Length: 79
Image (cartoon, rainbow, N blue to C red; front, top):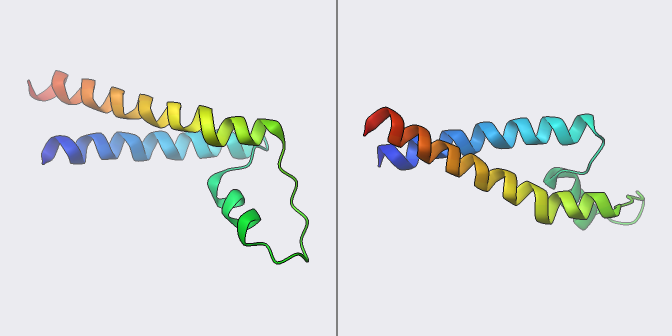
């Protein structure tokens, strides 16, 4: 149970950093994508190719890296 919590913290920290970087680079995050999906027509939202690459390729890979780092850190500290 402690291992899952420890890894979860690393994934959360990785997600925060990744979202900050995406925001600074003006790349759409999941919050913006959900806004796009729920837009009622009065607001035009443009999604670029880089946004799709980020959301469906880069972001999951980065979060997976956060899992991997969290697991390695847990093994290093507690094994």
